[in-house]
Length: 79
Picture 1 (cartoon, helix red, strand yellow):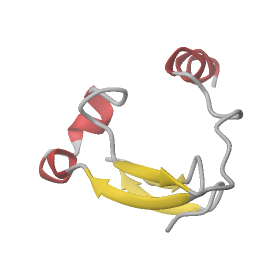
Picture 2 (cartoon, helix red, strand yellow):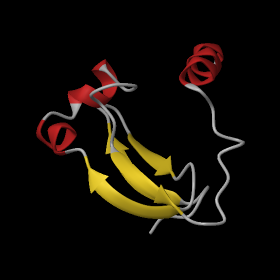
Picture 3 (cartoon, one colour):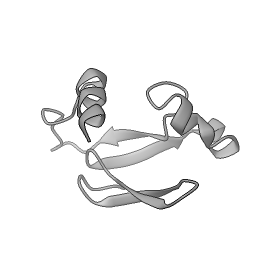
């Protein structure tokens, strides 16, 4: 189970470790085995083959505050 806003994982880059924060609360139902085998997928195709895990949302979870891929890319470009 993960909780929105709380740490839920760690990604290692060539220079640092990055803490992942859960976008929503719920139950992790599956992890991406392809990323385990080839972590570069996260960097090369983060919105496609580089997905990390799937979450079954908790019943009281809302997705109203989640970003669309376009919003995420626009925000990422400015930081």
